[in-house]
Length: 79
Figure 1 (cartoon, one colour):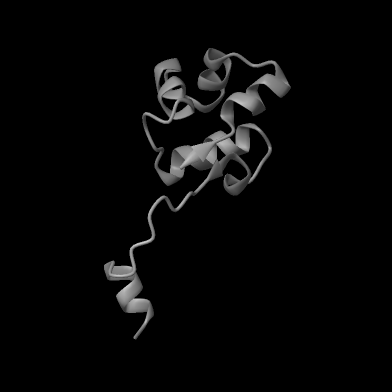
Figure 2 (figure 1 turned 30 degrees about the vertical axis):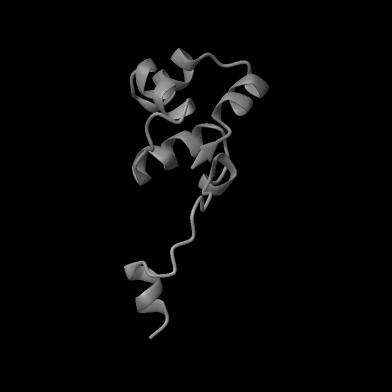
């Protein structure tokens, strides 16, 4: 999963610390999410997106690196 946090912060001229304060997390948490070291849970993803006035899908982009046709979800979908 990639994200647009750095770009959106730059557009608003926000620091990582400012965004962290807005959503109630540490600056280190923002750094980790922004750099792709940590994938946020749903609640945090929504908080980040709402801080920018965006939808989650506008901030976070799910990339299917490898399609696995034998995954449990795919098997269930093919029933």
